[in-house]
Image (cartoon, rainbow, N blue to C red):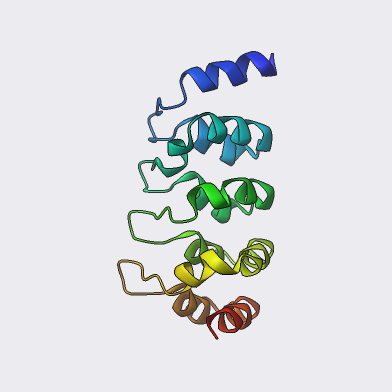
Length: 146
């Protein structure tokens, strides 16, 4: 049954529901890493599709704290931003997802781009760490910025 559902999801991967979410968005929300892997391998562009709130799959993974799924999507869609210009690092800081912050901190090359990226309000992930009181996250971000 699961194999049948996975095949159906692959065939209709770009079809969005009433929330603008594709099969990949839903797989992330369900925490289904296997389906996320299948869908993102099937069509890498799915990782950049935004739902009606402007979230991409990696943004949802950072928001929901699905670290393994986040890792699956990281190198495919690290630059994906929400409609408000927030990248995955902004969101991980905003939702205080320590495990995801630890993972991002290990990935030095992409982080150099993400750490200085401003959202539409002019905030970088570092600004958000200060606003949100994410002091462990702030410490990690400061080390990366140095």
